[in-house]
Image 1 (cartoon, protein in one colour):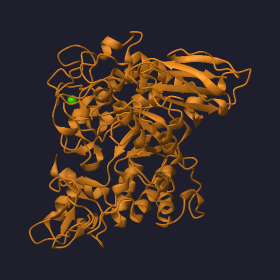
Image 2: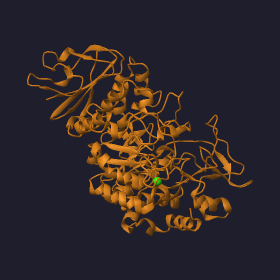
Image 3: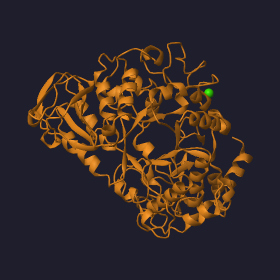
Image 4: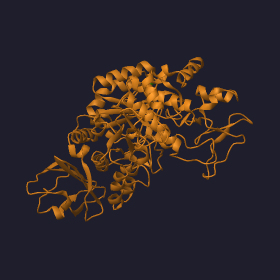
Length: 571
Ligand SMILES: [Ca+2]
């Protein structure tokens, strides 16, 4: 990283220089007019006419979630890059997905943070191919009708960011305004037992905060107007440069420590909401069809009021031991589903949309850990029976939420054999069976998984996981019920069977799923489903069942083999 260039970038990012983000005066004044504590932005008469809520293309779409560093390497240096990703657009388009969400691609510290600690929000990392490779990707993707979404990590930046370097160098540096500072002496958080995060900028100097390793990261202070404006400009900048949406990393944490009360860590603080409100208004003005998905674990209603379009459905994620899918995988008779999924759906106010997922980049793991990729949970190596993976895919793609498919899940990919924490779930894609697996002509930056499979093996092979995903994505996208339908839990006589109905005006789809390891037979109560004598059952995917009729709807008999799932269309 060229130091002189970095300073220039940092200055350009500063609030005073609106030209850096090509911000029109009209946009800026509209955003600045928003009070920090107003109601839902669209209800505020002082705001322009902006339509909030997830755009239709997101509600009806499927998103492919990619770690660029591990997807495809174009130049043999062992790191995946944007030209590599661009070279795989045929494959991505062939999956049938609508959009590709990239882990952070900005100038960063590379391996350590996975891109989440940025040095410079205004440029793409050189080892990803830089800005020109980004422009080429956008042009190629848009030419195919594919959307590209970026990951924004605003709560913490790298201690190598020019702002921090300058702030640390001098007590009078104006860049100090960008950081959460307190002391000396460093405050001690009172509501955390084993974690502090305050550290002196220099011996005897003020303290900055980071709740990970303070030697690598520092919290930005979005209560500072110029800092907030700079970050909002980043949101405008990348929309101007063709991005179609954003993932908001750690959205609840962006203002979790207040310099005015530095002993308390408080997620979802008023300053957090004020910032996102301003950010959402600015980005919706810039591109009304863009979308934002926030990494949120709770209080999602409050973020909808800020204008955020959708949140990830963490409660239904398999990857945490308190989530339903994980508990279900461990104990197939776990009855939590009957309450949990309706609860998850109930968390959303009207208009708010969910993001469903089975796995992501954040799951640490090793051979002994309970987490990892979804395949590590549901079909550990050597994976002899992939039925459970297919069942999880059928659930994901039937839920009332936009599915986010984490790269490799469509192959049944397991974690990297690297033991470095989250690297486990960030291993390289397996494209073919050569020594570099088609990922690189050099040496991959992190170990491959032990999977004896690849895109080349599964492509075009009927019944393969890849072809199953393709078929399921195609079915979902063509189904009004599965994409936009209401969600209605269906009572089952056996707790091992999870059943629900997705219901649109023109179509209903019954979904029955079992993670049991043997056949389960039960009856379902479909009496709420308005089955008439004219209803016709059409088997869509999975284990064929008898038709639903007006005579059997009160006690509809189903029988599912181990790890069985069925999609049944009722018309
Ligand atoms: Ca490369």
